[in-house]
Image (tube, rainbow, N blue to C red; front, top):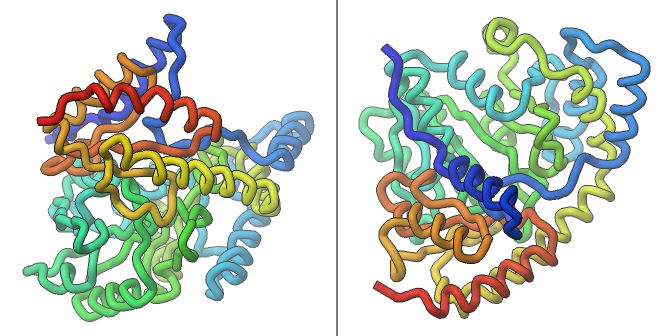
Length: 378
């Protein structure tokens, strides 16, 4: 029997935002975690060349896997065989592939709350049981080794995200090592979602692979590489898991898009351009951090990385979904409700994405200041 899962409410906000935009309204899209920039110029040039010369096929690029292997050696200091990379149609299929090939129906998998909505809902869709661990200000909205050690019985797996969605928080190096140790001791398989790597503002994010060589790593070209629509990602698996994961990949998804694989290879060597995007996000982040307290939004999760501000609006409402809709209709600024990320406490949180242009952030703040000033407190 199929599982009932909650909708992704940010999609409904996005649909309304697009409808208002089609009606002529000026809309600033801060509801989705997607860069407003396009793919790197070298990736686009490569794609044009391939379109003129190749028909495309069911194919997995050996050159791209080799380059990803070099990326892990250069970035994290870990040696990874190219054959451990499974190229996917984005991070979402990589997550499904990781869960489906690693766990069985009924297995319990731990995750942080708040956390990315699809973790919970993919687990439910695959007839697994999400074990959500409440993570608040004291834990910097992140999982801890102590919380995993306290679970009784131990779950079959855990999903780690650092930087995290919706908060942007990063797990410190010593805590990553402690989590890896607890999981090794208790037989908990780690799935590490590292899609926001490269987007950090207070030091760098460490890969869980540095601490747990047998973990599964999910990543994609959507965020740092600014290639959301190209639908290209990867799952990095332990050597002994490659045969099983490839069997699942072949049957569920076939292969990643040929064109995207060629473009992704070019994107990996476009760092100067991509670091320019990070500097824009850095400026946008600071603009919001400077302005939000004057709007009454003084309690936010530490945005160490990614491109989100997760703000407490509990003094204004206990229905953040209705709040986001009113905010959008009144100001044209689209945001995401916290209920997507935390079904228990998310009614008092909203998420701003600052992966837009700096002028858009400035425009949004000009619209938000009078609106929040006039909004009644509870």
